[in-house]
Image (spheres, rainbow, N blue to C red):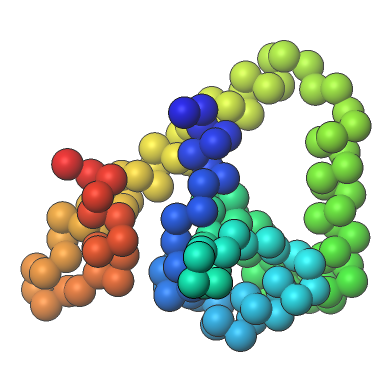
Amino acid sequence: MSDLNRRSTPLFPMSIITSLTDLTARQIRYYEENGLVHPARSKGNRRLFSFNDVDRLLEIKDLIDKGVNLAGIKEMLSNKTTKTETEEVPKEEKLEVEVKQALSDRELRNLLRKELLEAGRLNKNSLRQGELSRFFH
C-alpha cells in the first residue's frame, strides 16, 4: 500500500478527531456542511476521517485563528488544490516533499506509540488507545 493510500484511508471516528484537533464536533460538522472537509461514512453512517482530513482540519483551524473567514478559507483551499493539479512539479521537489511527508508520518507514529505505551501509567488514559493499538505490535 502506498503512502498516499495510507494517508487517505478513513480510520478515525469523530471522538478521536476532536481530541487530535481540539475542535468541537459541531465545528467539524460545520466545516463539512460548508464543503471544507469530506469525511468518509461507515455503514452505520458515522464519519470516518483520514490523516489527510486531520491535516486539513488543522490547516482550517490555523487559518481561523489567524482571522481568515470561511469564504477566505474556501478560496485558499480551492486555489491550493487547483495549483497542485495544474502545475507540473519538478521531480526534485516531489522527492523533497515525499521525504518531508515521510518524516512527519514517522514523527506521528512515534508520538502515538509513546502515548500508547504510557497509557495507564500515572492514571493517564488514552482515548486513542483502543482505536490505534492494532497498528503497533
